[in-house]
Image (cartoon, rainbow, N blue to C red; front, side, top):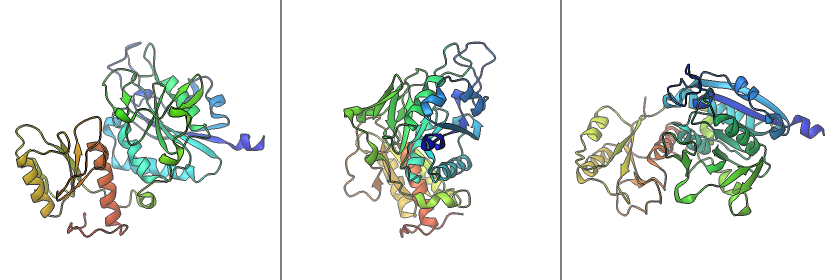
Length: 337
């Protein structure tokens, strides 16, 4: 009994639509995100304590629209997650988050955290003041997942489905089931308060203990973040944007390529000039499903199946690790200021 009493589920609030409100009663759009504090969110959902199986601890890390996510908030969120994961009484963490950049934050935390327990991001497509808000159910399901003893790693819980940080994407601007994982599919579901894993087995071992840059967490906020931008290959590309970014001192570029990593010849030439100048280049595919094959003979690496926005995060952290002296790679790139 004493072990159950000490068990904690931590809920970290960052704002977003799930905490949004509208002056128009029952409206689904036209709201302002991040208006309701995390304590109030928790108080509005019956059954959370029972789902947690212990104590619920709430902490407001940020309170804004996730379209405005910034490096300082990422650093603070990662450090708070790491601090709570260091507490053996914490069974899991839930993060309430806006949906616009939720997939980016999920991948960042997957790359930074040694999450042997679940870190579950959730959000909503309708504000808390909507006629039928989806946030309360998503929050209840997220707490249920965070309390599940078989769950591991950074997960996303929305519209009843459990997604992994690598494959999850927002794919619709309005509908309630706005997220999917492409042809990888969901990892599982929460149904009537119970977690059901795909193929009847938890993905735990595949999703935990793979934090490539956990050593960066203590120094986030003290290290400068490099400048990494995304450019898209499209009909009529001329590479001018790449040349301009190099002139302005960019440290990394992710190219969102067509198909299986193909690039407009003008853009490809500009990226080659950038790489020669010491800029780190990665190539990801614009395609929302499948995974690019290896790039043979290219002067840059492919993004290992990541979407362009997630490839950008991996490149950001890679450059930061190099700057901090970890995993030093001699690339000719000058240390960023």
